[in-house]
Image 1 (cartoon, one colour):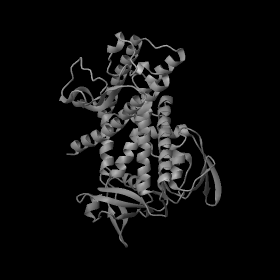
Image 2 (cartoon, helix red, strand yellow):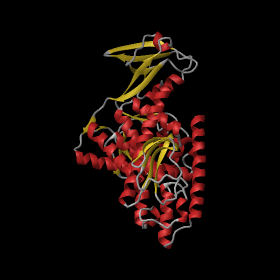
Image 3 (cartoon, rainbow, N blue to C red):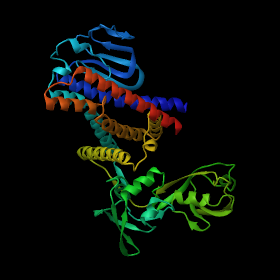
Image 4 (cartoon, rainbow, N blue to C red):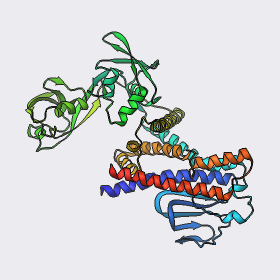
Amino acid sequence: MNTLMTIIYFIIAIGILVLIHEFGHFILARLSGMRAEVFAFGMGYRLFGWNKKSGFTFGSLPDDFDGEGHTDYRLAAFPIGGYVKIAGMVDESMDTSMKNTPPQPWEFRSKNAFQKALAISGGVVMNIILAIILFSFIIQIQGRDFKATTTIGSVAEHSIAKDIGLKPGDKIISINSREIKTWEQLFMSLYLEDMGTKKEVKLNRNGETIVLSADGNKIIRDLTKKKPFGISPENVRVFITAVQTLKPAGKIGMKENDSIVSVNNQIILSAKDFQNVIGRHKEKPILLTWKRGSAIHSDSITPTSDGIIGVGISETYTGKTIHEDYDFFTAIALGAKETYNTTEMIIGSFAQMISGNVSFTQNVGGPIAIAKMASQQAERGVLNFLNFLALMSVMLAVVNILPFPALDGGHLVIIIIEAIFRREIPLKAKMGIQQAGMVILLAFMAFVIYLDIMR
C-alpha cells in the first residue's frame, strides 16, 4: 500500500509540474503565432488523445496525419515527463519533415529571435510563476511563526557548530554585520544564505562581545560528509513520540509524550544530546529522569548493545514565538522573495558541486528520491505537499534553463547564436546537437536512478 501511494503521489507531483511547464511553452508559442502540433503528458507511445480534426482516438496517429493547425492533446505511455511539439522546430521528437519545405508563417523557424526565445522560455517562466503562487498561498493561509530567540541552548559534540566555536548560552547578535532577531534568521544566515562565503559571527557570551569566523566552504564540505550542524535554540523540550514495550524504555513504564529531563543528572537540551548520551552507554546502567504532566519520574535503565532504549524522540520549541499574518499583496511579495531565495540556493548548490565542495553522488536524486519525498510531504499535510511542489517547480526551472543541448537553455543558446550571426544553424547540425544532448540526458537519468537504488 505504501509503495502504491508513493507512486500515486509521484505521478501527481510530476503531472502538475510537467503540465504547467509544457503549458508555458504551449501558450507562449500560440501567442507568438506558432502552431503547437502536440501537447503530450508522458513520453513515448501515444495511448490516447483528442484533437479537433479526428476527435478522441486510441493508439498512435497515422504517419501522414495533418492536424491542419489543431493540437493533438495526448497521454503517452511513460509518465516521466511531457512535451509540446511546436511546428517547424527541431526538438526531442527528432522530426525533420520540414527540411524539404520552405518556412511557413505559423512555424517556429519563420519567427524572429525574440518570439522564439519567448516560446522556449515559456516553461521556465510558468514554473517560476507556479512557485510564487504556491509559496504565496501557503504564506497567506498559515502565516509564519518565528522563534523569538537567538540564544543557543545546546551544541553537539563533533559538529560544525562546535568547530566554529559556538557554545551553549551564546546569544547571536549579527552575522556578516546583518542583525539577527529570530532563530530562523540565524539558521538561514549561517547555513543557507551566501553558501560557501566566509561568515563573521558576532555574539554575546557571558556579557562579553565576541566575534567568530566561520569558513563557508568548510561548512559545505562538512555537511556533504553528513557532519551535523549541531545547534538547538534555548527552551527546547525533548519528548517521546513512540515506545517499544519490550525494549528497556517500555519495561520501566515510559509512555508517549513523556518529556526527557536528564540522564545521569545531565540536563538534556536537544534530541541529539539524548541520542549521544544513550549511545555512549551501551549495556551500561544510567539514571534516566523524565516528566509526565507535572510529575517527575526517575529510574535506572540499561541501553542495549546497539545503544538504544526503544523510543522515538523529537523536540519542540517552547519559548516565545512571533506569529505574523499577511495580506494578499504582502503574501505575493513574500512568495516572490521565497522563490528568489530558493532559486539562489539551488544555483548555489550547483556551484558548490562544480567547485567540488559538495558531493555530486550524495546530493543528486532521481525519480525514486523524488517519489519518496513527494510521499513523505503528502503524508504531513496538503500545505507541506504544496511547499514541496513549489521547491520542485523552481528546481525544474533552474535545470531546464541550463545551457545544455536538448534542454530549454540549450535551445536558447542556439537562438542567440543565430541572432548574432543572422543565419540559421544547418538543420543537420541542430539534429546532431539535439541527439547528442538526448543521449547524454538519458545516460544521466540512468545514472541518477542507479544512485537512487544504491541508496
